[in-house]
Length: 424
Image (cartoon, rainbow, N blue to C red; front, top):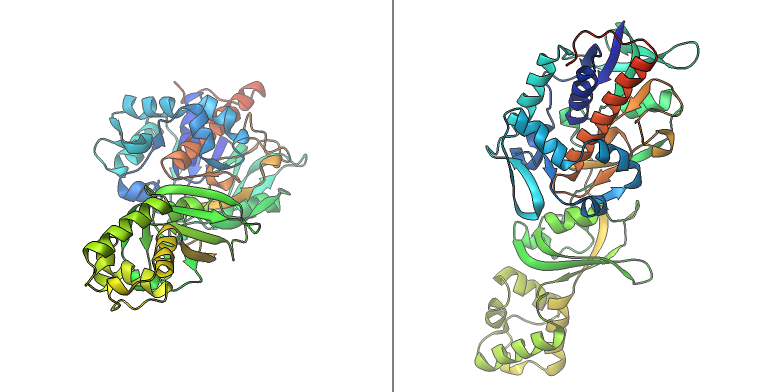
C-alpha cells in the first residue's frame, strides 16, 4: 500500500508530495499530463510570479474568497518560507513592483525543475499520463485509494486531491477534483471565471481594440448606485470590451451574475472636474480656430478622443470656438466617467483562476482534511479560494498543498501506518 497518493502535479500537488515525503511517507504523485507543473509554465507570462512579499494583513486583503480559511495554511508556509524553500534549492528570487516575486532568471521552468528535483531526492513516485477517475473509500467511509482512467486501482492510507480548478483547461484543469469531491458527498460552489476580461454592452471600446490606457481609474457601482470598486492603473481596450490589470481585478470583485453592473472609466483621475474644465477652457482658447478633434488630441489618443466626442454627440469637425458651455461640460463629464455596462465575463478558458470549488465548510482549515471523508485532503484551486493577481494564488496553492501533505503524513504517523523510508 502507498502511504499517501497525491492527485495533480501542479503547484499544490507537488508541494503536498514534497512535504509528505519529507516526513517519511511513501508518496505517489499522479498527473494526467505528460509533464508536471504545466500551468506553472504559463504563470506570470512565463516568468512565474511565484508569490507576493506583502505583509500578512495586505496578503489576506488580496484573497477574495474565504481568506480566514487560509490562515493556518499561510501560517504553516508563508511567502518568506516559500521564498526560502526555492532559494535553498538553487532558485534565486527577486522582488519587483507591487511586492511581486519572480525567479531572477525570469524562467518559470526554474520553479518546476526545483520541485522536480526535490521530488526525485525524496523518492516520490511520479506517474505521468495517468488520469484519476474516482476515489476509493473503505467500509468505514474513509479514503482508501483511487482508480485511474485505465481501471487500475491504487491503495493509499490518505489521498490528497490537488487537481486545480477549471480555468485554462488546456493545462488539464477540467474540474476532475470537483467531480471526485461531489461523488464522495462534498458540497461544491459553481465554477466561475475570475481574473478575466469583461465584455461590455457598449461598443465604443471595440473600435479602440488594442489601445492600452495607463494611469486611468475604473469604478463599479451596485444596483443602488453605490460605488464598490475604484482602482487606478492600466486598462486595455478590446474587440469585446475591456481587459488589462484593472479589468482582471474587477472581475474577481463582481457578483456571481455581473450582467448590468455599471462601470465608469475616469480618463483623468489626477484632475477633478473643475480642474479638468479649466484645462479644457485653456486648450479651446489657445486652439480656438481648430477642430474639436484636434483639441482632443491634446488630451487623449486620437481614436479615444473621437469616441468621447461621439458619446457627447459632437462633430469632430466642429470649430473649437463654436463649443457651448454645456457641450464643454459634457466632454468633461465623459472624460471623468466614460460609461460602461458589464455584459458578462469572458469564459473559464481565458480566466487566470477559477472562482468556486470544494466548499470550505467541508474542509478542516487546520489540516486541509475533509470533514466528511477521513483521510481525504484537498489543496490548491480545487478549494473555493481565489485571490487577486500578484503571486497570491500561487502562494495559496503552495501553502494549502504544504499543509495537506504535512497533515496527511502526521496522521499516518499517529495511526502507525507510516513506513519511514524516504524522509529526511
